[in-house]
Amino acid sequence: MVTTRGVEGGVGRTALMVAAARAIEATRPDSLARDGFARHFVEAARVPGEWPVHWDDVPGGAANPLWGRLGRYFGLRTRVLDDFLLGAGAAQVVLLGAGLDSRAFRLSWPAGCRVFELDRPDVLAFKQEVLAGLGATAAAARTTVAVDLRDDWAEPLCGAGFDPAVPTAWLAEGLLLYLSADTERRLVSAIDRLAAPGSRLAFEVKLAVEHRASPIYRSAKEQIGVDLTALFDAGPRPDSAEALRNRGWTVSARTPFDLAAQHGVDLVAESEDALASNRWVFAGKARRTGTEGASMS
Image (cartoon, rainbow, N blue to C red; front, side, top):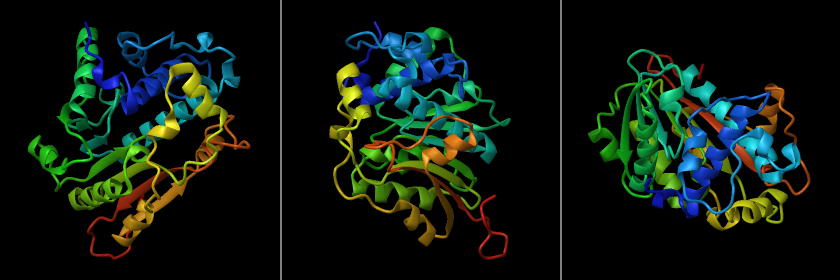
């Protein structure tokens, strides 16, 4: 029997929620991202009730606040961040809080690319068990690093073969929302310390936990028993984008609605919108070319 302790509750349950959303996205006629592994994670887990893994099984379709609206947000986020990672063309990729993401298996990585996945031991164990059962083969040299990102993770990462002298594509997808402000500051500082010039970084932030009565939050609690607002850190958030600028990174922040319009997706701001304070941040560390102020390509 597959061990599911790491994804049965708390923040771990949100990894399953995103996997279900990716499975649904893959079956939409207008799919933005196709993750053929996602449904297997949901089917292997012991979760109460029936979680849909196909668009045709979503009750209410696009009108469903959880699997319709939030699910579409996750589908768009997956596509945008897939494009970011592949566009970076980096020889190393670090996925912080990798969860049940299967990018190491489903994306077309550059030859010789190494992908490092960091997450809690129990989450990675569940993920590996499911993938092994499918006979999945990674499309890059994949290394998992079992750590709690609230603790020191830089030393285990370097010990696993990460080379801080090599430009790297870093990703923190759906992670910072659940960390304390101090932990987020330490994480950003560690990335800056380990990132070679030419590295790129993408991460997601929530400026504030607003609109607690949002249909998205209510629907998540009712349909899958996840109280998202209780999982988000309640303290004031640090300005990590500005912290990176102060360290010499070139930074841009986009709303999901901006990128939805860019991709032709019907995802627009609504009243009492749980997504209104979400931002996707993209940053680049200037290469040492002898010219100050080099910008991110």
